[in-house]
Length: 310
Ligand code: ADP
Figure 1: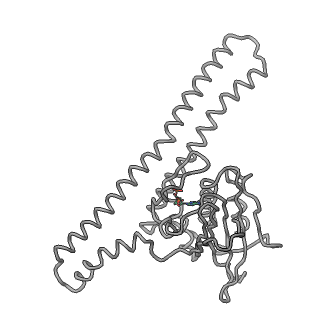
Figure 2: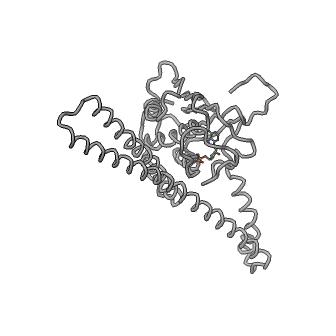
Figure 3: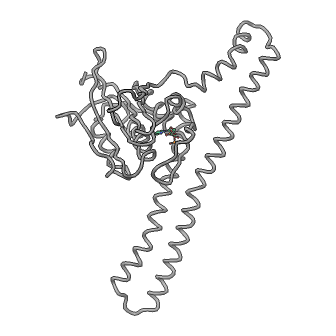
């Protein structure tokens, strides 16, 4: 992110306790709650307010279901098309093999390659869909308080390296910065859940910046009020996020209007940041974002070091 223009507005932002949307909803139902608590019967106006709040929630739910249905169906169309293409190519190859006594190895190699392409694409899209369904299930587990998080001492350096290596576009990640001489940073957390949270940030950093833009991942140790925390930062040079949207992006299914996916076919269900926040906060961590529209975003999280490290 360019730091040349000092007059440029900087949005240094940490996750608020309540999003704007939740605060608005709370304000709407507050009078009814107060009357109920004081034992007074609800007023007609209050009932109307409650109805409106419920209607708004219902509308939001309906539009989420419709968007989720659409997003889940989109990969199926390409999966079906590619499966049919692979079958046609297989049939062609079968006929060719049946007609020829001797098969030329180089043409066979090219035919197999043509068969491989749609199959690779199917696997790619199935994985994408699998991820969306897992996210949906995890959101429901978070909401019902049943998400499984098994805390144990684990090495954050290893977790970050795994996440980066498993990224589709690993070549875009430059500067995987780890503190000098720290091949081991022991945190007390669930390594799978930390990797899942980091994956959400990496996937967004790739999605909301052009394919030729790099993504930086930095791992540092922060000293704060006598306690030491491990911090992971993911920096992209993409669309950035307007300041007045920074409170909303953590909400389930919230998407910033006007921010388009810059790389890849997948739009997503708008669950990534909700899950990211829930997973980190349930491991006694903190999260935040610093973003400049048109320049890029820096998302971060901290997690407490395990006892022996602090
Ligand atoms: P999704 O990416 O599936 O829409 P997320 O919960 O991961 O859902 O993100 C919510 C919204 O926040 C996105 O729709 C996008 O508008 C915005 N956003 C998230 N990460 C970034 C980023 N790195 N750069 C720009 N916008 C982002």
